[in-house]
Length: 616
Image 1: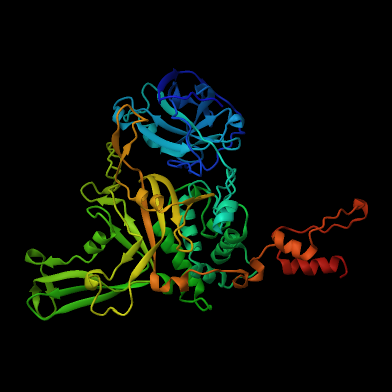
Image 2: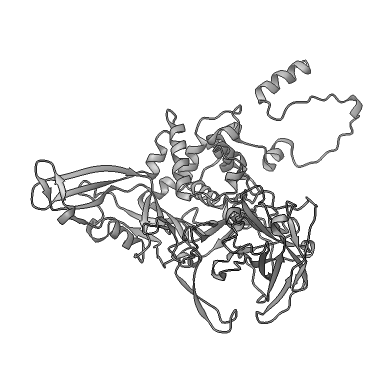
């Protein structure tokens, strides 16, 4: 693949003709990719890429009768590209659109930075545009967005996307070439990551980092980042291993067994780990795996399910012991002696980002006292309407403190979810995200200022000093995006980035400061003059571990903590059993007896049938 070296440039090509193909060999992998940002792993950019803008005018759009429809070929840096659309959706009720690299076998290590857009021909500001970063390779030569825009909006003639039955699609493409060094994450780090199902791994994470990644089923990066975070809390992992399951259970029907299998493979596999059985145990189908869900919601549901499954076992109460804290809601009258209190538990805390510069400011706001006076007086029993103060104070914090950062807010004026960077359209929800700069410390002291966050009932002998364990990051917008996690597995100075199947070593600056959000200045090398822009990636969830309990929570988990039916034969096990010598056996196939069984047959039943068949 060739690409000119020099300053960024833009060229434009346009076509109104299209080619149709009935070839169904197109392999669309992990199609929900609104913000799949390529990893940086000891690679360096060797040039700034030129951009090519391709405009595709599709006439008689509503009459297209093929499932997928291709544009003419256009060239970027001398290589062939095409746009592929599914006019009636790729098995969804949305327009689906992808970029197709035709010379994928010749593609060196690198990735494309591109955007796909459906132009609004009445009001250009309502053009629907998705920006994507992605590495193309021989097996994954097609990438894009399955849920690009609702078909109901596209085919609504009043909205301006179809004018005279003509749709205009625009693709802006630049290809970055990178020098690549073989990368193996587990050797240097001691763990494994989750891999993108059906895709090729670009580096061996385990050799370099000792960790492997989790496969992405299409839009499950949020789940992968959460699973990696939970896996790297050894106290939690050991409790999951000790949940009672049997070899006769089916992982797809048992959340404990499916999670045990994922954790075991993360610990001992040399390759990325699949999560399909786990999502099946949630009751999800393929469409669920192609839709983004909320990390906080998944975390709560998963912990509730596990908490319920742990009842009556030796690990009962583990979820509460790790994650449960308590706070006190109070209302106290000012002029009379009356106070109402209510104790509540929490597994995570939602902290305001808007109007807060850091975590401490959010906690200040959390315990802020509200005055109840005037028309808002409090009705106290036996005292009638009274001036009062209302607030929240913490009785205790958990050993593992999970903080959900409220990067999205509800706009009550418009009665819709909104994002700070606003795009509006009549009858379409306004999208607004809180991308303000928000800092979080490596060490969090919740005893600060004489225990200002603590209730009178709090045990002051417990030191509430926490160290940061993991940072879950969201890149994208309200409608979707990509998630990954920065984790310190052993709470050392070394951080690791878990981005689906890829695991890389990172420094503290990358894990903390670059995830604060806010504004960033684009370097002059990309444009004629520098300018500031709002970052689309920022921390979404923080996990802290209490300093005084980190030895209890962070420790080595080995095979003695794992039931035998979860273990699989590994190379070192086979070497121990049969030695290192290799032999060949010459066999007459006509004299060899065969015994056929179903893949799902329980092992105990297999032993019985096998012994009967072979008279053993």
